Image (cartoon, rainbow, N blue to C red; front, side):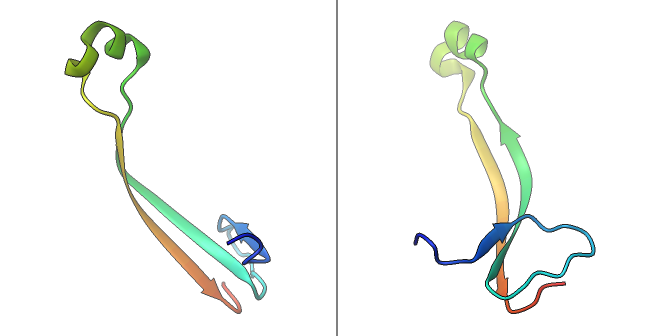
Length: 64
């Protein structure tokens, strides 16, 4: 959906966002990245990489 929003920004303290702004809040609950060395030496036994996160998208005329 190209050009659906006027801006997409991370929330900044004490900032009022104008109409057409999408506010994205991300909370990463858990993350595991298997490194190259572990993958090289352990192969499939090194396990999987993953990320559990919660994303809140807020679209409003005025965000405080």
